[in-house]
Image (cartoon, rainbow, N blue to C red):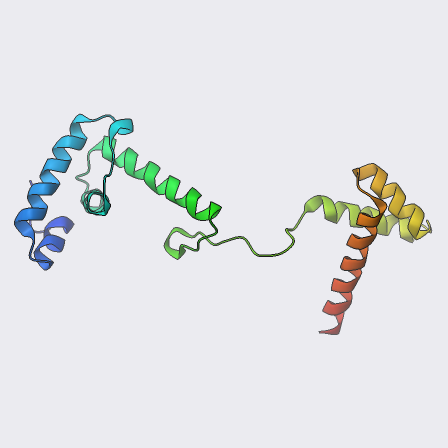
Length: 156
């Protein structure tokens, strides 16, 4: 079933486990061929590794290919949820701190428009707060943070 040009053959030969690995891989291929994708289960790291070797050579049964794809997708979701960094899967944790919010940008833009039009600060804060269902203090703090950031950027 396997030939010397196959990745699994080369890997098993490298670790001097040729007979064990190839017979185990053949048993897995036979098992996975008979199972539907939802029934395929990778019970340990060895089975996952064998599945990847077979996939690389185009020898992995379709049901196991689907199951392996779902394992990768689940792994990506779990890594993102737990804030892991997996460079090969292009997963980086979210940056720490306050998340960027487009509605906050809109609130600040509208606040600047009101202030430019000559509306007093407290009244402008109140108008924006009512429109976006926030407190006037929240709008004021956002405005002060924004002013502080822009002032710091101008100095550097």
